[in-house]
Image (tube, rainbow, N blue to C red; front, side, top):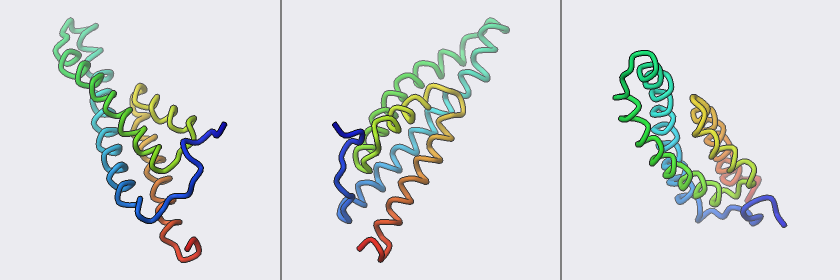
Length: 125
């Protein structure tokens, strides 16, 4: 059993789809990350210290729903670039820890851009 989603090499005709999947993933990683930071840094203290749950209500539910969209976009990107399952799971979990989704997005983007650059280089043709 393979540890990656697919062992076949990335083809040139897959590049536009990969770029679109990367953009969707990046947008969702930032949106989910910002909502989680606001929820934890602003909402939770207001709820438990100030007895005001407005921020928790306004960010908690959207974060939860958009986290599901993040999981879908991460899977789509991972499937297209053939990430190992462990990487995909770690990227999915990053959306549950404040600030970590930004770190995961950075490394995921770096990895995907590196793969696309290697595909475009003359040595790989």
